[in-house]
Each structure stands twice: as C-alpha cells, then as structure tokens.
Image (cartoon, rainbow over all chains, first blue to last red; front, top):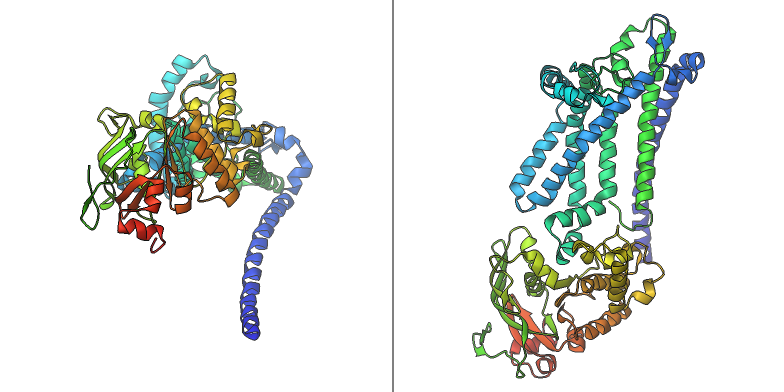
Length: 317
Length: 270
C-alpha cells in the first residue's frame, strides 16, 4: 500500500517537473523578450539619445534635412487620436455590450448573431479600415460632418480651423470604429460573468431593468470594463495603417481637431525607409522607443488603477 | 378546497384553525421551456406567520417562491400559469408592474449576495436609494433600524463604510436580510437562507426569523426538516412539483395524513 502510493506519487511528480519547467521557460521567455526588445530600442537609438537628450521629447520641429528632430507633435497626435477614439468608442462599446449581455438575454439567437458580427469586425485587417476611411469617411467628414461643427461651434478652439477631412477628428473616428469590436467583446464577456445573484438581488428590491444594470451589474464589472478600455486604448495607440491614411501626416500641435496631424506610428511607417543618415535612423528608433514606453506606461497605470479600485474587495473578474 | 395527491385520493389539506391568507395561489404552474416544474399549486399562506416550504431537491419549492415575487419569469424561457394573489390582488394581473410586486414582497437568497462594491451602509439601504431616498440622515437611520432588525448592528456599527463583501458569510446573509427589511416589505421570501452557513450562523438567522413574524409574513424554503419544525408555524410539503400536504407544522410532523409526507419526514427518501 505504502509502496504503491509512493511510486504513483513519484510518477506524478516527474510530470509536474516537466510541466513546471516548460511553463516556467515560456513565462521567463516572455519577460526576457520584453527586456531584449527594450534594450535593443535603447541601444539603437543611442546616437539620437545622446545628441538630443530630453530636447527630443519637447522639440516641435521635425526636419530630417537639417537633422532637427523633435517628437512632441507625434506624441501629441498619438495621445489625441487615441483619446478621441476612447471618447467616441467607449460609450458605443458599452452600449452594445450592455445590449448583448442584458437585453438580448432572452433572445439567445439575436444576441449570439450580433455578438458574432461584432467580433467579425475585429478580424477585418486595419488597412481595409484605412481604405474605407480614405474613400468614404474622409469625404463624409469633410463635406457633411465637419463644416457644421466648424460653422456652429467654431468659436471653440477644438473646431477652430477650416475642415479638410484628413485630420485628428477623422483619425479619432476611424480608431473608435476599430476599437469598438474589441472593447465590446471583452466588456460583454465581463458583463456576462457578473453572477445572476447580483441582478436578482437588485430586482428583488424592486429595481427596474435599467437600475439593475446601473446599480448592480456595472459596478460589479467596473474593474473588468476598465481593463477592456485599456485594451482598446492600447490598440488605438499602436494602430498604424488606418490612421496614417486619414490623418494628413503633417506634424502639428493644434488645439483644433479639424487640423492635420501625425502620430508616432505613422511617422515610423512613412519615413523609416528614407532614413539617409545614422542620426536620422537613430531618431526613428527613438520614436519607436517612445511608443514602446507609452504603451508600457498606459498598461502600468491601468494596472495600478485597477488594483486601487479593487483593493479590499474580495471579488475578482 | 381539495387537493389531488399523486395517489389520486382527494384530501383536505386545509389546517383546522381558520386563518387569513396573505398570499393565495390557485393552480399555479411554472415551467422552464417545456419542462414543467410546478404542476398546479393551490396554497393559502397565512399572514404574519412563518410558512416553511420543504421537500427534496427538485420538488419545485424554490421555483414556487420565485413565482410569488415574479423572479421566475426573468429566467430565459421560463413561464408561469395560474393565479397568485397578494391580499386578494392578482400578482400576475395585466396592469401589474413586477417592480411594484417586488417592492411589497422582499427576498433573501440561498447564497448571501451583498453588493460587493457598496459599503455595508449602502447595502443596507440599497432598496431605499432605489426608491429615491437621498437624505443622508434618513438613510443612516433606516440603515441602523434595519441592521438592528437583522441583529447585525452591534457587529458592524464601527465599520459601516467597509465593503459588504468584507463580512463573514453569516454576517453577509444578515446584511441581505437587513437590505430586504429596509424597504419594509409585507412579505419576506427566504430561499434556504441558511444552507451556506455554519450552525452558529444558522442559529442566529433562525432566531431572527422567529422575531420577524410579528411584522412580516414569511415564506421559508428549506430542505432541512429540523429547521422547518424549529421555526415554522405552518409547513407545506412539496414533491415533484406538487403540493402533497399543508398543515400546522406540529400536526404535519406528528400526524401526517399523506403516506408520502410520512415517508419523507421519517427519512425513507429525500
């Protein structure tokens, strides 16, 4: 009896060792990859880092001919378009997610069909969104959306310039459309994971459907929805092709959403093949480093926020 | 009124003493899709008494009380037929808003389900804030009253701002009872409120239930016969979606009229 259990335990523990070393290697590998990536970026941008120092981050002029490089317009463009994307995309995503999880509950067929369609949107390659943006969205924005914004609300700095179609606002809209499927799908799963007992608790107190959603479901899911938002923000920050095609690609720091702009990703994709000197190339890599750091910083702060929000609560999603 | 038992003989399940019914059901049927789990329940639930609904798993006892506050219909595919009256008024009437039914008939669930993102205080008065009460002092007083009513006040008075989820299981369940009491319902439905709790917490909740019957009509679902005999004034025995027997608790346990009831309470099945 004792022998039997001993040997079977040994057999099991051999499997444990193999499994543990496999997963540990994978886990360490991912971390190592991240470190190597960061180190490579720092290494290859060394020339630019030592030449321009912090001035690279605050400079507003990008002139490859005279080797004057300032990244601020691109950082501004990335943050602005991503922010716009969240502002436009999050309410829509949440609305669709709430519809799918709360309202389509009794109509399984419709819910899953709509859900599948939303997820299908996430599978469309981003260059397709870019083409659609260029040939459809840009003219629509230029002719029908932006002129009224400019003429009726032009007194606001954000609509202060003449509409051109290829601008921050259009980039924000296309990014919003691109993050909606991801944010919606993740939020819907989060909302579906809210235990029914929470809904029933609210119903049993005499709550209406809307009150159940607002007071029981959304608060319970808030940290998860926040996570979904950050996922969307990450996609918006890193998105390249579609934005490049509709933003106008002119570095500017304008308060007006109707003016042309440029993002970090667009700059890399547009100019990397044209780097004529090692300093220019190094500056391009530093743009990549900034993008890398930005993405990490967003995720880091998101985690801190989620942690602070859920501290003390015993539940987790 | 007569009842068909599954043996087919007509018996009177009406208890000897007359009483006024707070809730009355006639031919109440409930289904999930094509699966009928309640097969026509006729039951008069006495006002200001504790009525236990007991029976083996799957007998429909939980579905029965979920029909009384119209929670059953929220499950996809669920349907209800028959009549359920609250003070003679049809709960399933055409113009009746389920929301108003649920404000008069509170519920405590099997597993404690406080709102984890709300403080203890906000949990206790969640139903009142739903009704639009905003005044901080009113809410605070109502919270104290209902927490005292649920014998929880002394344990939480110094930490009303903590999360409702930070309490122990038994405390959470009493918080849920306080939450249900705060809206001052007329009827309190309790769905196996002690099944997730240890004996000490169970004893506390049972003691609490017996003090509540002066003000509330209580329907207590339990699969625990000892619990039914300890706290309930009346007991209904359900089996396979049918009401087999309903009587004063003492009589039902000492002198059951149905063979099925007798076999259940003597532990021959269940």
